[in-house]
Length: 236
Image 1 (cartoon, helix red, strand yellow):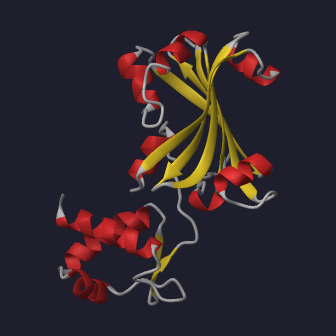
Image 2 (image 1 turned 90 degrees about the vertical axis):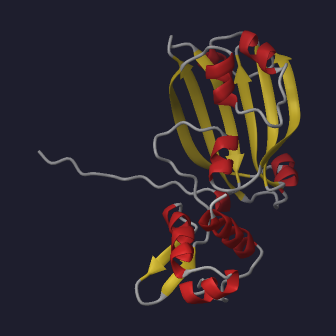
């Protein structure tokens, strides 16, 4: 692994453990970090730049580099599953299966989205470095679900399996993001108080033949996710 990447991941890990920053969230200077890690300032600069780009830090001219209050997901129009997103951000992705199997006890919304009377469901607690940060409840057409059931559902890269193993080309996904409050069950799983704010999401993934492939409902701890959108104003 290149030296600057090793240093980048060390900075990420040490900052999460409370090191390298002062009480205001200001990161050590490049010179201080160079002495701390025993590397050149150019290596430090190359290590920090991706952390700034992904939103972990923000640079303030004349003041320094400061830790942001939350960890962003990169919402850039690229469809990524939880494992891909978390690994891309430098965490170890994990999962605990809470519920799986065929069911016809699903609500009207799921039935309308997937156009199936019975579906295969998968409910998982999602982990980042063994910390529970999300609950995902996904629903699939029966034929897809029965194929997924044969695989390791704690480490599966879902969209890669769709395209590379099951032969389903993904055309697009329609995603809606909102806010919700943790109920007793979610609060216990995510280790927060009941009524704590959560980020909620629904996503319908559609195949090249316009067939619904997955309907996903998720809730996330908000300090692990941030949504950034570029807006333009239309001029006549």
